[in-house]
Amino acid sequence: MYIDTHCHLNFKEFDEDRLMVIGNAKKAGVKKFIIPGTNPITSRSAARLAATDPTILFASVGCHPYDTRNVPTRQEIERLISKSTLAIGECGLDYHLYGDEPAVGRKEEQKQLFEMQLGIALQYNLPVIIHSREAFDDIFSVLDSMPSMPKGVFHCFSGGLEDVRNIQSRGFMLGLDGNATYSKQLKLVIPSIALSMLLLETDAPYLAPVGHRGERSEPKYIPLIAQIIAELQNVDIQKVEEATTANANKLFPL
Image (tube, rainbow, N blue to C red):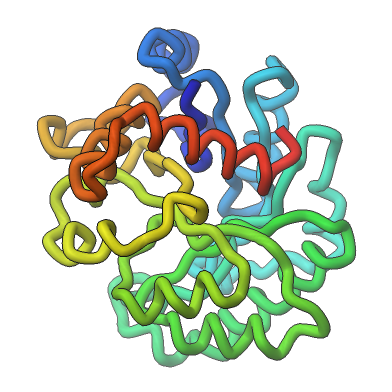
């Protein structure tokens, strides 16, 4: 069994065929799905979707760093937490662009939003799903400033070996997505990542793997990501399947 630990099945891209997408994923061996929110609206839709089949669908609630224009209060995020909530996020820092502009002017606001959500995760003993883009040093700095280290995953990892070591030293896991099938940097890094810290994700509808570039990504592509990891680490794909599923069950209350 595979688990897609990060797929936005609540997004509008799946409004026309959501049940078929889930069914096709099941046929491919993907049996559980974590649906992260990116703001209060998508967090509520993730929770509603998870409630339709709580044996296989699970929600995470939070606010993406690009949503600092309409920052919810701590109480508003806490009110999003329900029985189907198994994590806080996705949250974190993104210094790439902000509304097609350099993110410099939003860095402090992003940090404050991130710190607030880490505090909620610690209060409710929930793992965090961290979005990090061109911001690893500040992410680690914020984490180290917390009263205790939360548990969680660095979603859609795109860093280097030093970042892997920093993530591992803090006890976090690392999610690999469809870009693992085409990123030259990731192909150099993946052989050195311990299977014990890996999770599989699609970030659907984004980051479709090789063979499907330019298409809508779906959870059924998880085995393609597992296959490239197996090839790069020179192990059987079943070993990747078993390890990543065990890791997901260890991190999240599935």
